Length: 620
Image 1 (tube, rainbow, N blue to C red):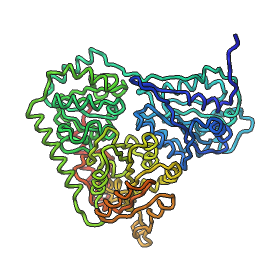
Image 2 (spheres, rainbow, N blue to C red; image 1 turned 45 degrees about the horizontal axis):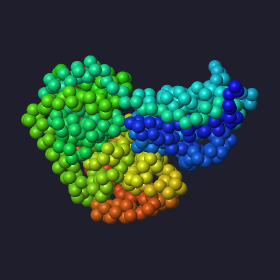
Image 3 (cartoon, rainbow, N blue to C red; image 1 turned 135 degrees about the vertical axis):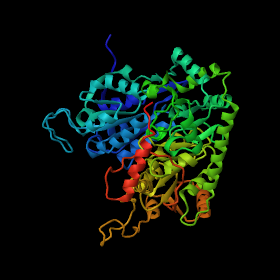
Image 4 (cartoon, helix red, strand yellow; image 1 turned 180 degrees about the vertical axis):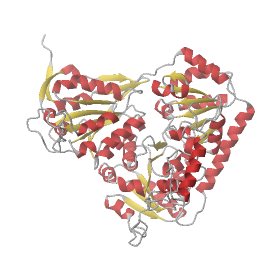
């Protein structure tokens, strides 16, 4: 019997296949892709562009910047707990390479996104074509090869029938909690338009199960033994807690055993901020209680964390001479870090299995009381920062406090780069597991507004507060237009401190006096950028893209502006200037190289501090 086929172009077959891919976890099934972002050029307009026109049931979204569309896709997938994703398509050339930064953001944060960049002609007979990179050692290379190191799966479709193996493999990676990240499938512009007789079963509904992997029982028993022997255990909650939806299990465990929890950037919100044993932020941007508990811990239970240098305070956080790590992680790569007892599997099911085995275990009353006291003391510090009453321009901490206080329990704050992430990590009172959305794996400037758009697309029922400094805003603000176009409401809180405040503060701590971090004219006498602030009107810029804009100066004006923004039905930018010198204190050391020799006294002093702090580092 003849096999049934469907004659389609490569691009048409791609879109038809993608719209029939579903994902399932815990019996809940949903379409995996929410649509496709794209900017069309000669390398994809007649291929993927035509296919999207032909299949309007697969939504197309317009963007203003190729990097931004990937950031939007990353935020969308993160909000979906990696159970949903978006597709991004561009032409070959600068459109494609603009996506490389977004691909790195996705892969470093382990978030699924499918990239379909156009590519040079596969048949080569008209080479070199416009935007083609020529190499004298091979004709099988294009700028899309740049995606290889930042993609979890990379392929180039040189013949239509290659889709039959490439697309299912792409889906395997995208839906894998272990392997997920950016998937790049390069689409030569001529091949996109070529037709082939595809088997009809290729386009049938396909459901990809996201399995909850259970741990090895011997490793679990060993972990239980180590915890029962611990006198000062701690839990570090990472993003894996949220992706596996294990907040309930984690909260029950800490309350019953008395083991305190601290949260990474990706894991903030794993438990409610006012849980008595929630010490808040950990690591470089951690609270005093979390830093002290980490230093004294004899057992560290890491759940869904990859132990970045911010979490480990550049490998100096854990000072107990016999500290033992127990890592709960779906990725073996992370579970074995720091010579840990590895519990490889899904965080939720591992906590469900671990909890009854610790039924009779509790920390000492003195240890529990100490951690609860530390949590209460930090909450008082947060209140004092929120109500600092700093003169105009007000402090960044007060802005965070106003947004946090006036937002609702289900609302979401999003940020990515500058000094805001650290302050938010320390100060934000997270009231729901998805309420704190920080891209800090790559800390990519420009993620904020595009990310806010993706969050709102994933869950329109929540108010989204985008907190962004002037540095990030100037790098990528144009997705305000996309939000206006799609009638997506964002509340964008734009803080202007006339430069790069975070790096400015770091520069000062390294003895380099904030060099090159202020937005100022060039001084004709000194030749340096210290000739006075630039007369830039960022509020006017935001208004020009279709957003409503409200300016504020004082804390009271800010609160009034935020209340009005909540009432508005469209994207609203609340603009306020802040004092870059008024910083939130209590940050731990973080290793950044300092010049070993210098003529500057401040640099010499910073180098001596570096050597002193490095002496605390340990290889666990």
